[in-house]
Image (cartoon, rainbow, N blue to C red):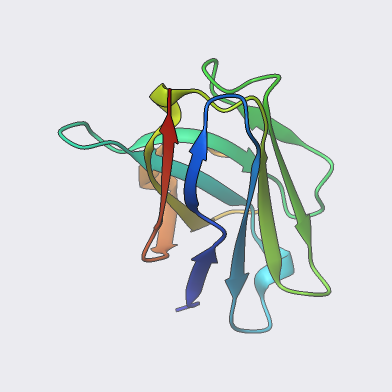
Length: 124
């Protein structure tokens, strides 16, 4: 299995921006879609964004569409989540995950490897 390590989380104020990174091990990174999910205290893990293997197809949850951008650099085995105009309701632990297929998937059941998560806290 691939190992995923997220970074870039932190404490920011509403309206600020953050960029999360997820570095993957292994030589098959470029063959699979990748996704970002988040989990707030007391809530279930929810889908945020996904990107296909080539980086030319993306999909976002309604709550982040227009504010967040997912991208990937297959040469660096890294997927990114640029988060702009952050809101207090974006506060959560953010996880990246590797999909079991090359095309975008929104369900957690479509992912087989997960990072340890990075905390994002947005103050009002």
